[in-house]
Image (cartoon, rainbow, N blue to C red; front, top):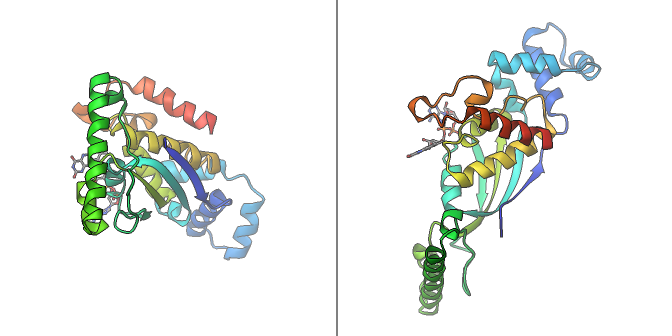
Length: 235
Ligand SMILES: Cc1cc2nc3c(=O)[nH]c(=O)nc-3n(C[C@H](O)[C@H](O)[C@H](O)COP(=O)(O)OP(=O)(O)OC[C@H]3O[C@@H](n4cnc5c(N)ncnc54)[C@H](O)[C@@H]3O)c2cc1C
């Protein structure tokens, strides 16, 4: 299966909620009159100002859940390093991969016939040994030790908008590994389709100004800006 990312749930009033939380900080009004005022106003400039000022805690009131399929354990190992998020991942302990397992093949391996054939052959040998271990009564929780990083997995992730901005900044960057970068780009498009003002400047640091990667700068800021702008345009 190839990468499949969907938005499972999101706040349809994300930008109103953020605007209300931010206005509350600066307004003497009670919350219900604040809510009425906000509902009748366009919040574009206000949210823009709040985000560019760095008053980002107000973004923590809105969370987005994504279902992610067709990714490797290489990807999810990197994803779960983001601590300000919630995860549920298919277990290799309770879900047996008997009869063969799905796996992700990088394009660089697919590009070379010989490497691709060797890769597939190793995956097939692993699948055979895995089945053999199960048939010898080795529990799935132990047989899984031989499964590769390439093994396909599924995960649900929930992040609030502040953490999503941080995630997009690191993982939609050219310095990020290709598989998690593809995922990040897809999540960015989905989040932007729901809350275009909150995610207006989302993406790696070069989208907002100077690259923060120093000597590791990819040197492709112009191309990256176009790529991220296209993701937002298509969303
Ligand atoms: C290009 C790239 C290469 C990488 N290479 C490696 C590598 O070689 N080895 C490796 O181990 N990891 C590597 N990582 C993972 C990286 O070190 C982080 O673990 C990962 O990106 C999660 O980011 P984070 O810690 O900023 O954010 P999150 O966990 O998403 O947290 C968000 C922010 O909350 C704050 N925060 C969260 N927890 C704490 C805390 N306990 N204390 C204080 N502040 C906190 C920080 O400001 C943090 O930036 C790499 C990441 C990238 C993008």
